[in-house]
Length: 74
Image (cartoon, rainbow, N blue to C red; front, side, top):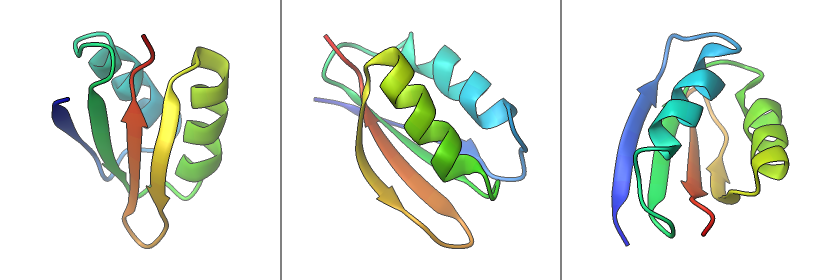
């Protein structure tokens, strides 16, 4: 299992989700994408996106910089 990093700090909705959607296509099933974002709506956006796409939101850390770990579905 590999983990890719994605920096979305300074980007506002919908750009973090757009970048996540592009990045998730480039990794293998079971691999993880670790995303850092500063958008206040990021948690709600990434939760909705993962439910819609079937990818697992493994971990979320709130704060000034939010951190989400997404595992790509098989």
